[in-house]
Image (cartoon, rainbow, N blue to C red; front, side, top):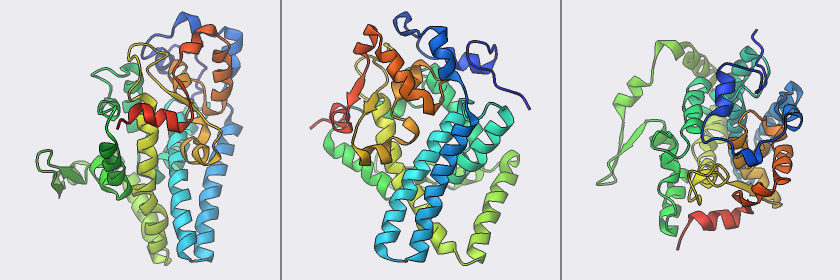
Length: 329
C-alpha cells in the first residue's frame, strides 16, 4: 500500500493540492519546524473521530428504538443529522488524504464509513473539492454558487433554509428534482436518474441497496427511513447550508488569501456541537494549509495568530456576527 508523504517532501498530487488556490502570503508562512508536526497524519486520531461519531449515531438510534417516543425520535433526527455532517467533515479529510497515511486505507475508510453512508462518493467529491481549492472564488470554482447570492435578504435566507428543511434542496442537488427558474415549478428529473447509474459504481450501489433491503427484512425499514434518511434529507442539509455559506459568502476580498475564507470561533456549546464537528470552522486556516488534518487545525490557528499579519484575517467571534455579515435586512 502506498504511503502518502507529508507536504514539503511529496512531489505528486498531494504537494500540488497544498500549493493550489491563491498563493500563501509570505507573511504567514510558518517555519518548517513549526509546520512539520502540524502536517503529521495520526491514524489513532482518525479512528477516535470515527468511533466518537459512529458511537453517537448508534447511541441515539438505540435510545430512540428502546424508548419510542416523539421526543426521543425528534432528538435522534437532530443528532443523527449533525453526525452525518460530522461524517462529511471526515470525508473532507479523506479527500485531502489526511485521514490515514496509507492511500488505500484512507480511500476505503473515507468511502465506506464517511461518504457512502451520506449518499456521497469520495472520489467524485475529491475531484470537485480540489478544484474549489485551486480556483477559489473564481468563475472556475465549482462551489461559487454557494457564495454568489450573498449578502442576501432575510426573506431569501429563510426560503433557502425552508427548502433545505423539507428536503427539496437534497432532491434537487442529487438530481432527482429539477426546478423551472421562471415558474418555480418542480418536476421529477427522470433523465438524471438514468444518467446517474454507471457500471463502474454499480456494485457499490448494489451493496448499499442490499444493506438497506436487509434492514427492511429485519423489520427496521421505518427506523432507517425516519432515523437516517429523514435527517440526511433535512437536518444535514440545513447544517450544510449554514456552514457552506459562512465559509466564503460576502467575504471582504476574494483575491486576498487572508480575507476570502472565514474562520468562526465560538464558545457556545450548542453551536460548536452542531456546526463545528472536528474543527471544521477553522476554514481560513484550512485554505492556507490544506494538508493539515482536522485535529491540528486549532494548533495551526494559534501558530498563525502569533503573526502580526494574521490580525487582518477574517476571523469572526461567534455565528451571530458571521450570519449578520451575509444576511441583510
